[in-house]
Length: 115
Image (cartoon, rainbow, N blue to C red; front, side):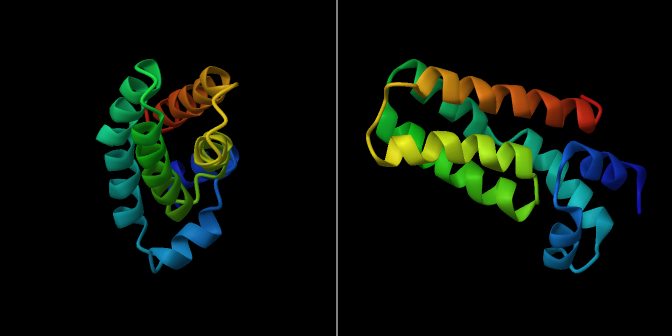
């Protein structure tokens, strides 16, 4: 297992499940992980939340949730879920705090991959 995968495991990622989905192709996984860190959905989500465009925020968050789940990034996936479900239910009472958790997890992910 590569050093990056070891770091992912320490982060709380489901590396075993992710490797199953990526057919044990660590190089492909690492490439996808780095691309995900630059996903424009993060900027779109930030903008939509800031402008209180919650339907658009839901679309971005839902897409990010799927990719985070496929990559096995459990902490980030859970943070995004905590935003997706209230957006789906149109409960906007705690959106800023829920979004802040996503930013915290994204920052942890960026540090993990050396950014």
